[in-house]
Length: 80
Image (cartoon, rainbow, N blue to C red):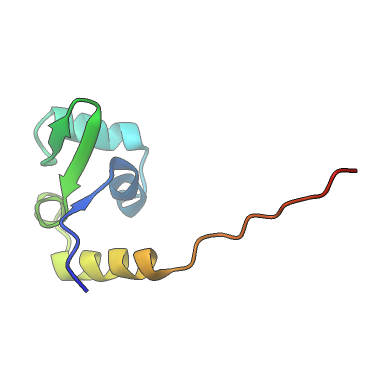
């Protein structure tokens, strides 16, 4: 499997256990590296790990595990 290069703001916020707006402020202040194209924001995984002081390989393993997990089931209820 190939290594993930980028993560979403919501994934970074989840990892840091904070609000996504906090991550966005970190990006705006230049603390967290990011690629911004219009409204699309992606964070380089290794740059994020270095910026916040966590092990990049552990983060990549966590993201790979999350990507491999099956999606949540959708329950369809019939008309009553």
